[in-house]
Image 1: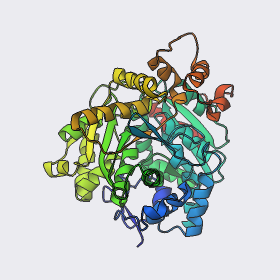
Image 2: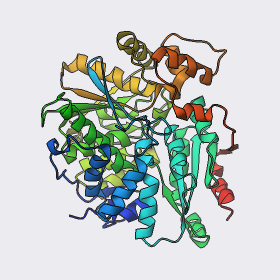
Image 3: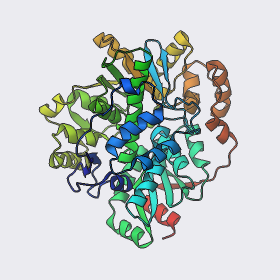
Length: 495
């Protein structure tokens, strides 16, 4: 059965996957969702000896049904290759009673590689299928990880340009240098004065700017997105939840059809939404643990039913989660509203105008699969230290937020269900915060010197991604105010 896509706000429907991937965002400002959530059409037992690439095909073919088998497999094989430093792609590590799903073995040592390695190939294939002759301009706001992963994925890809906006002073030293040293004539990196929500709101406004869209069209360009608002980003993230469950089956850590919990450090809601879609696909996930840092807007929402972005924005040691407007939550709101685009659009309008919205009691009941928790900065640091002391295993700050929330959940519920904690970044990406949590503080050395010390402490080789940028030349120097983001695009494209 062909899966078609429609906007969460009702403005578009019956859109093919390739068209939805190219557009990124619907013209009415909504997000594309499938007209039905498919079920996996092969058994988990039959997948036990499958590679990551095999599982990826079985999942993606259901959502990208207008791609031929040859087209989809070519995209998959180009994406999940030697750029990952482990042939397993997404290994599971057992530590202190949980299974850590390591999603940071790609070229930018963060989980965004899992989807952004394949998105350029999906997009170029989609352009051919849609007979698009315009050059595609990827426009992305990042809280740290998406930016570099997107830049790496699209660098020098023919027929594309990519512009990344990130919050100045809102990312780690290593995250920033990864972006600013990115090569590629088609890449442009812009620091924005403000926080991630400012940058993300700016990008959304640019997408809905009809005059700018017309100007681009006249100049032979069209916008698309590499954020998880793009369905081409979201679907590949479903894959690793299916693969992780299959791995637990293979290792006899769970019985076939035995339940698991999934714990996800959550900011923009895309990663945990992918887990929710995996559950709908057939993965027997009992609980989806939504782990927030001190910017706990999602925790408060799951507790009260009110989403309120009107609050202090806190800079934390887990910056990729420093988000107050979780864009992908809109897809879940649409689902729990009974797929009513009018109600979803109304709630999103309330968020835009008033800064908050409240869902109904019946919609709250649809959230029973979710458990919300949050970890303070102190709890996050203590979790890193405690896990290392017990096991010698070192995790980054974002993973530590999830781990800390999982401990609270187990204490509160006594639930002994086997649980996967999603490890979203290498500890080397946030070396300063990790070293401080381990009690290794020395303000006189920079993050790159701390990398050397962490490598010895964790007994882990320094990732190639860190070595590559250590002495790399800074190539991007642009900084702008939020209101000048559009002008930076026009300047870069020379239109």
